[in-house]
Image (cartoon, rainbow, N blue to C red; front, side, top):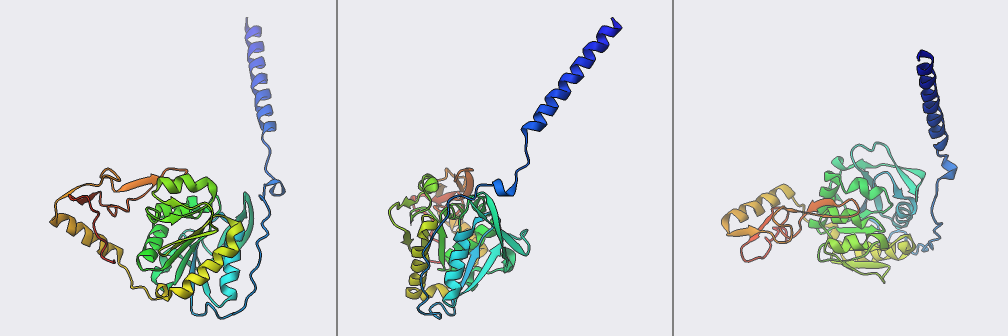
Amino acid sequence: MFNRTILLLFTFLLGVSLVSFAAEKAFEKVKLEEVDAGMPYTVKEIPVTDPQSLKGVKIAMICAHGFEEIEGTYPLRYFTARGAVVDVITPDWIKGRVMAVQFLKPSIWLPVTKNVSDAKATDYCAVFVPGGAWNPIIMRTDGKILAFLSDAYKANKLVTSICHGPQVLISAGLVKDKDITGVSDIRTDLRNAGGRVIEDQPSVVDGHILTSRDPHDLAEFCQAVEEYLHKNVKFCHGQEVKPAQEMESISMSMQTVNTMPCSVCNGTGKLTGGPGNYPYPCPTCFGTGRVPSDGKPPVSTDH
């Protein structure tokens, strides 16, 4: 009986060892050269006819690890070649340099100019958000990044984005009732956030929101940004917005009128969208959850 027990135990342990060995053999360490770098992009370079055409213009490139390389480097080259100053701004925890990718494959490091806590939206004429699969996931859950974009929009700065970048605009509450575009796989998300998606234009402008579809549109996108800045120099001279005071003013106005729950967000003050169903402030009630009893949204004090 004892020998039989020992034999069964040995057989069991041998079986566990074989399963463990088989499992280990089933996993292989990924080699960098095996990682998919996606399709090659051959975006035409636009000759520089006036190296001072954007002189005096400051642009904030807002990004995190995982932005698509060409969506950051192409506009960076385009704007700086024409005299603009471009600051690369990242979430606070990304120090010194930020990583670009080519689809799934890490590609280059880009020097960081400032972390978002050290940057001020009103210092810039335009804010640019590149895409990439991972970059928006990080930024749309960073409250300081979203506040920076919101401040830029309220101060009449040009807010621009391409490819997957408009997902960040969803979370910042800047998509509802806007003509907008983005890469094909986020268009449902843009519609769910209240945007009017335009599919057949390389760049779409609505007010001071400018978006493009994907890297193939980079040349047209950069030209549209340059043209729009030339026509609307007010983006460089917008008044500083104080969001906390504005929200306090809206809250006080809610106390002096009859209100009812916002029907758009069902009184929660938040909506959700994007592949991760991320929350973002309801743009109808400005995140308060309530609107005047006549159904009209509260009026922002900066308009």
